[in-house]
Length: 372
Image (cartoon, rainbow, N blue to C red; front, side):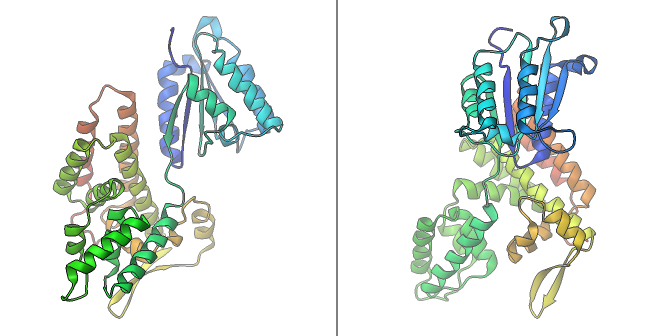
């Protein structure tokens, strides 16, 4: 058992992925759970949880206790943001420091600690200790991604207008995605587009953007998710192979795909419950959200409420979501989570795993893309 990692941290916005990854770790560390005696699950928040300080003392006692009859023992602390973000010098931080010192001294043979949560602070006592003696897996989404995208769209439209150029929502979205929304790049690329369109019709097309603006690494991942969700399997595989050849992280590509299908499943559920519909106003089609107290309660509790999404982006995602019934989207999300576990667990070639996943998703959606 010498040299075996005994402390693991898994955190991120997607609870399902975090829980699935932690469950896989726990099962690997204590196969079969030894009839339930080898695994102690401690709730950090929610039903069955205690005060954070009291909870950490329980964890301390747990990691100091060897397994029954010399067997393996796993302590799984769940919803532990208070530990993963603990800094300062209050009572909670002091107990977090005690736990950090405990894991740095090494745990008893056969004892393991798995900690999961949504947020972590790399400056925290426990996180610093984990970087030294444990393993940390971040499944975190960039914070306020949607808000940043909306600011970038507004800047892109202003820059285009300042140069006397016109572009519809689809073209602006393409431009923002390809530049990653970086203001310096947006300035540079709009100048190129203005020079290219000089003396011609001032309307910028999507082909113009694709021809002149190279895709950033982040934009390339969006392009991959777009192709998969749209059911364009051949294009998705071409993009995937190009990204892998450019040494993009397969786990990152998979996590991005997971976020996309999470968005689609939420929007599909909203459609099915009547909380979201589309309405035509002249030549324009707009998304319309229905006022409903159940929607307020469920959607308002999400870290990224889809009702705050830009209307054009909602329409783009709806086009993708309508290709699948809700149960199919949920099944795809489970399949993505399973692929993630296999990928990080080793033993499977990540490129082949991604290719098979793309082929499987492509065979599941409706071809027309307009069903409701």
